[in-house]
Length: 149
Image (cartoon, rainbow, N blue to C red; front, side, top):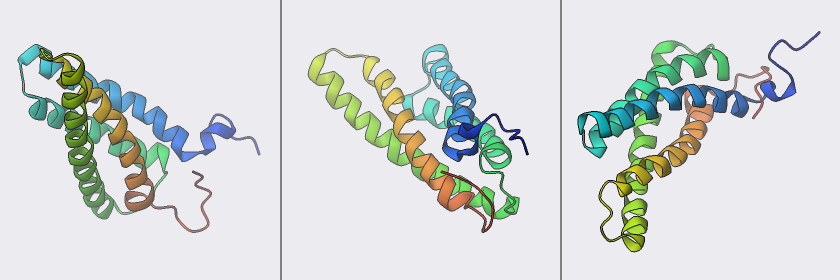
């Protein structure tokens, strides 16, 4: 039987997760930068709201497309929310600390550069942590289903 998911690469949940992440990132990161530079929102307000909007897109696409989950929505949405919040706090706190230290060491008069760098660092950290949390805690592989890493 021919594979309808786009070839062998699309059989891997991490590849599908990354594709969903592109959409999620365009929505979330676009919102973050719009809020940071368009409205003057603070780092924490912009990253929280941008990630919240991106998380809504992420939940639906990851449930249906990435992990093809049959888990009850009530339980998975609670786990999803806990994972998203934990990843957000860990990733973006670590990112702002690293960015302020790194940018300040290079450019003592850094202004907005540290926040911009922190958003990019935080996005990378968040992606890795979020995949692990969603893969193993939110949408765990069902026995007998061929969900590949």
